Length: 433
Image 1 (cartoon, rainbow, N blue to C red):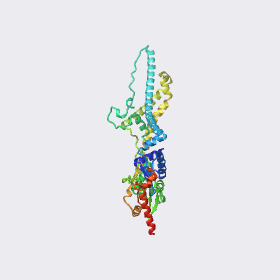
Image 2: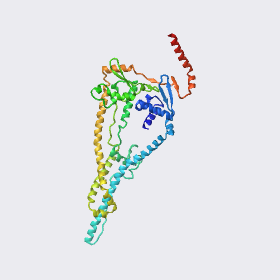
Image 3: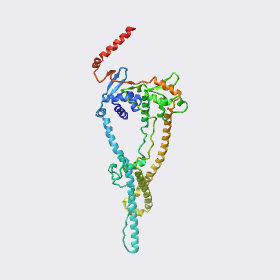
Image 4: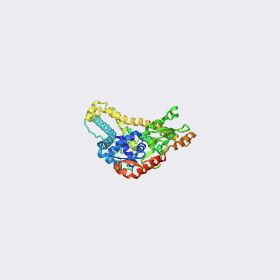
């Protein structure tokens, strides 16, 4: 299902008329997978085939490809509906950590308040018995720390505060971001790697040398593996490439499938090297992060204060059933408060370590890209040989041998003059012999 979506998006970006090489390069898929995926998609969407006289095939998909697939596939409808449901569920999961933090803090504050009232009442009763009566009133301070609860669920665009960007998350989402971050910015790194390599191959008309590919690879191996360019094997396997040896013994790599395209493409400008994006600790604002730290600290300190007040079982019983309940889950509250601060702290140092590695890998790949500016004599010879193999076959509509868009008899009639001319040429060649 994921591959079908990837191929469909590639077909749409390419203008609905594609070859296998076009889709493989656009999506960064192996040629075999792209071919199987296109055939399956063409069958499902009833696409037309255009066969050139060279035998190459172009696939013409309907402009309303998504609508056609939607109407025929219950899986796509189910997947679309599930994605909508999952977005809601994931949003609830994201805000649940903030809700739990606030709920934990409220329970702790209420339990401390009730214990304080119970302790004060017990002391006053003791004093009254000693002094013969009396009464008193207890004034409790406002103990809520953090943003207004009425604003935490409010969408960013409707808050009556300083101007903020529309994409800014609310406070409850910021709590999740503070705890776990916002995902891996390089989750699509492998996809970007192969797309970039395919762009380099297409930009060089289907023939490259190894030095042009190394800025997009991570591990080049050591010793003989690197000298023999073994790192090119996965590239050759993915895009059905073949090594070609020059008269001087240099090796270049040709990719015939990527030399065939449905239409002349605009000049492709691939990136210089594969660049990994640094990880961010959180996309929440500094104010939201400080608010989350403040609530987490208040929760942990409150839990420690509550622990000392829960030492007297008689006082706990006098405070009421809510305090008894809080006492039963106290270690959960304390553990959550401690983990709320410990997890981001550990993650902060982990992010710094990952970013240092990302920076080193980026610098290594950039250095390989810079090395291309200083071409050696061997590389110059290989590039010159590669130029002799470069070619691009554009499957236009003028030289089609067959298409499923029209009846075969109609096509034969339309091409009668062309067929007669070809037969005449063949007869003249045989007569000359």
